[in-house]
Length: 455
Image 1 (cartoon, rainbow, N blue to C red):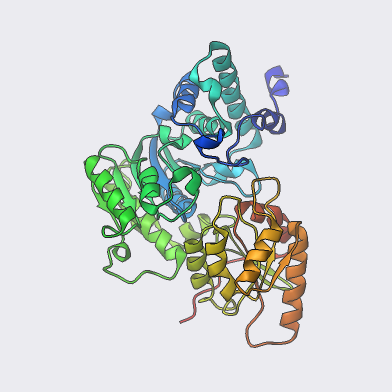
Image 2 (image 1 turned 45 degrees about the vertical axis):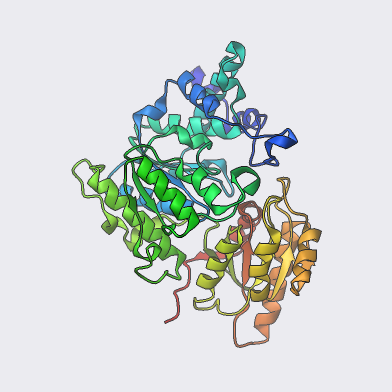
């Protein structure tokens, strides 16, 4: 019997070690003047990877940042590359239900055993750094996970990886990678206590993933858009060019479909990878984005639809006002989703409640305000008060499951009356809220494709 296999730690055992580290997804990302500042450099994660033998230097990367759509664009690019016969890794953030969702090879989550081994190696390296007082002693939860993901890709002989930023870009753990092509999907106000109070400041943080001569793709319009101006100046400094879809240049209407916008960005990335000979002789281009690839690239909690006996339930983790506007415009153009939904809402503590609710409140039947659990979150009662100030019908449910039960009850009652538009449910504001409710929907409802837009 192989005793090393028998003694290998389980994923749950390794996660206990991981959870002891600072996790900025679980804590208030406070500014420096409040004594809880996030780090100011990439030394800890760089040192951690050095202790692991720098597995990150053996891969070619697409690096993706942005306020909304970065996960979908990354997934489309990875699925397109896989369809061309390449072995490709994808590092995603955040996960909805399982940590394994963040580390994928050829579209499949890495097995528990592999993730446990790589995380254990990263955590062991951190222990060495503590003894030696090297920078990796300060590595965080996300540093360790990033290092483990890159190690997993290296050990699986993956040469190509699509890496999604966790927060911002410039100081994100993933900025240890050097992208052959970098992407900033869009720039809106988010995490303003960390990234800056203006779109221009946030754009600087995100575009800073771009290195010299790398390809660059964005959906942010050029100047006079202030964020676009910051981006273009950085692109020029890096001696490369900026690729934008026609609609970002104002040469075509902005597509109402979020899927179309993400697909246009992914297509530009694939075209640029083809020009850079990523296919090793195999054709890489936007033509890889077939219907099959779109289906393979679908993500949990992003425009995801379940058919319940009470009515349709849509999950989308939009968490800023501009994203919520786009999601509602898209959804309410689709068959069966024309009417105002019953919304279940939770928001992180650092989100702009007023701006978000100002978009959501006029377009929903009512808002059931809940919590994202133990993470820093807006209080349900506070959400109710702010929603009611905007003349929305709002109810408080501290437990997400109670909010879901109430929403299903309301939808069933409304649909039983035979009204002209079907009642449906929108769960939004936080992927953590979606992670709390999605298991129930998987058990009680049927996953279906997003309904088509109405002509």
